[in-house]
Image (cartoon, rainbow, N blue to C red; front, side, top):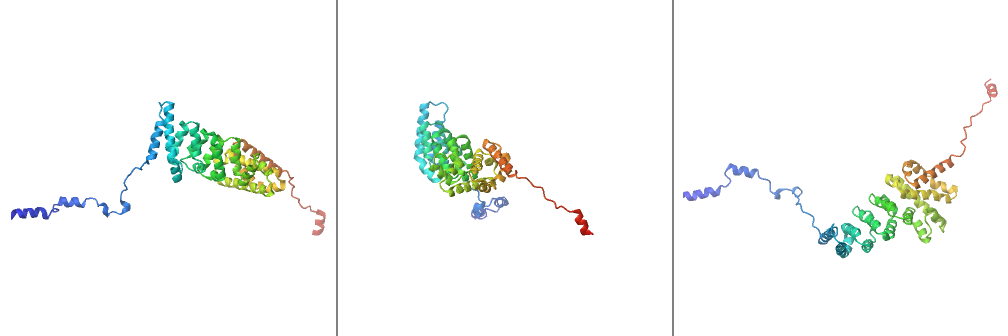
Length: 334
């Protein structure tokens, strides 16, 4: 009986001690009773795809310091094989940004054939690359290391729209850097022509000798084409002026487009050219400090000075005061 009582006392009241009760009351609330938003999220590392891990390992092999040219070229060929295998799928599902480190490695350590291959594999994506922060370096490196791809890259940028790229926070820096550092004279003319509108580009395609806005106006077959070109150029310039971005307003690209616009108005008669200048000249006078940073900008200032002088050459007549005959006035008063 005592044994049974001892066993019952030991099993029937396991939580009778105050210490045990205190421990239970101070225990944390189970996770099942918490709301879902209050539960801590598990810290999981992002899973690296197998193809991306293989490309990273191959890039490290290519970038080794003490490596013979033959072995390095062998690793570049292996990297090119990986890129060719996965590039169509990766680009179709999210753009070339995940492939940027591998492609930059191929451009840095590959030969001329590899560089041309990289440029051709990204055909159709250069406008999107200019707008992507992850692909800016890749785009500029393609322009730097592969001169034969300049026509392809700049053609796609102009086809997308020079004004749209200039108004984009990321693409504007890429376009201006490409214009200043990597474009030759013909490519710069094509980029500036993109600011003059699609009609100017069509006239330039029709006549290959067109290099400036004045040449495009002279080659217009119909009178309406000239006004379409001038209207598109004026709207684009005023849009850039209204954005008030000092980087774009001080760029050589914008200065050349503005200078060609002001000089092309000399082709028109004076009574027709004045309305086209009326909105642009005041904007230029507001930003004279930013226009004086390039050769085309100084020409713009000289053009504005001549316009202002021509408008102020008319003699300013003094106001005519009424003459009073004192004798007749005294007679009337008397």
